[in-house]
Length: 265
Image 1: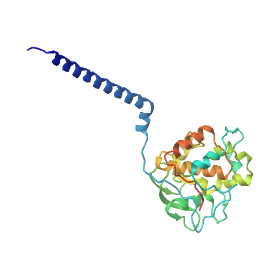
Image 2 (image 1 turned 135 degrees about the vertical axis):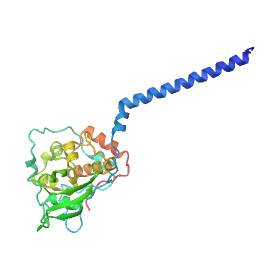
Image 3 (image 1 turned 90 degrees about the horizontal axis):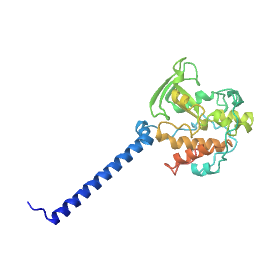
């Protein structure tokens, strides 16, 4: 069989095409491996939970607003974030919970303490304990931080499964402006329904005093509301954000550019 020059050129062209295809495949494989060992393994491992995208603030008829330092500005959360002061953390060595007053006061004067107000607001089918019109004994809800459906039952051991979280943690607030507030203003911050949500106890412990730079709810669907609520609280009580916190908030809001501030209604 005689191999012509045309056959030789055709074979060489096919060989080059095969080598080019192999090179592209190898580059794609290396790129995929690089992505996996940097961010991909975390994206794959991260739980994708369906859950609520927002949470209530007030309940009409029986829950009253708490007077903040200033009204929450209405508008885009990202615009309000842009005007919040940006500073480093203040010292926290002199912090303890008592600087925000006694826990769970009846600040809005509706006859029930704040913890039970929030449970009643957030739980579906909330039932009071026998003989009480305030103490919530049971109920269920779709928990916002994890997206799971949870049941609450009052008891020495069972109550801790559902906790009331300060959206802007009090320890974080203390390091970002709350030291300049009056005792009454700090008491209001600790009991303001805008800053309180019933959540999974373990998620609340995981969050602790973290800000948005170091902790966000595992339920991604809730993150826009969560960050907007933190911005609203900080604006209402004259608190600042750190540079890392502001960057983290902007990244979250980048996925929901129309997110509004959370104005109590």
